[in-house]
Amino acid sequence: MASTTISSSTCSFSEDGQRRQDNSDEVDNIIHILKTSAIGFYGTTPLLASHTEFFQGGFSGDITVVKDSGDDMTELLISGIFQIDRQNFFLGPEGGYTPLSSFKREFLETKLSCQLIPVQRDAAFDTARADFGAIVSNVKALKKLIPSKKGTTLVSCVHEVDGMASIHLSHSLFTVRPENPSTSCVWWLTLALLRGKTRMRTQTPLTMMVSISSTYSEHTKGALERAALTHVICPLPAFDQNHESITPSDYHQKLYGAVIIAHFALVHYYFRQDKKSVFSGIVREMVVLRNPPPPPTNPLKRSLDSEGPSFTHTPSFKKNRLVCFSGK
Image (cartoon, rainbow, N blue to C red; front, side, top):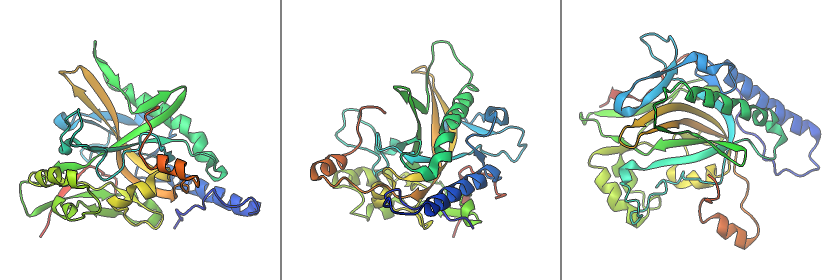
């Protein structure tokens, strides 16, 4: 079993070269596992678009699937090693929702989101950093599979500012509660390949989340209780270095600037009234490889860093769609 714990880049300069080489070899081994896994496609796979087509999902969007996968349609998953950007980080339990916002968004519309960038300042991840450009190119090529419509604006999950690219991922915080109360929806997280087995995560009822007073602020609880009447919450499928689920109250502490294995799908939505096509990256799983760097020692910088994102720029079981099973 390959380990997913990588030593922090903050080690002293006196650490011998063998330790650094071991870390680099371990990362390269993880990349090899991702490339040879039957679960999905490593992001640098040559001509990835030739393996892909869009399945028309109607209201739920058009999802990328593996071409010619037959009746057992398989969602296309893209894998890679990235760093979560501290800019535009909205992976808190409330997803940046503010009841008094002028945008008047409903809490049910809330999506957690973040941006993936190349791993910064860590030689152990040189291979992963070098792969980032090819991954971005493949995602752009997949975007071209979307039929263009005259007068339509296309919004991409690839963001580019001053020549620097990032991949924007999101996660819907809510899904409609099943009509049958004895039915519970679960996420099949088949991406725990480094543990050598499939992992499953059950969605947490909203009523349980309401009881966690430390997770949601007082002004959000009312919206959460109303949402509980019709929806259930979908926790972010994020796991720490010990492969334990990261709780909502720890999202910021454990993911803000972390290096992760990310597995994501691509979905296309067309909004006819707005004449807008949206090409979105959807989180399927995140596994932390390197914890976020420590906060700044300067108290002023530390307080500014904690205030939120900056707006200067923005194994064989392969079916990964959301499925429902009857439960007792």
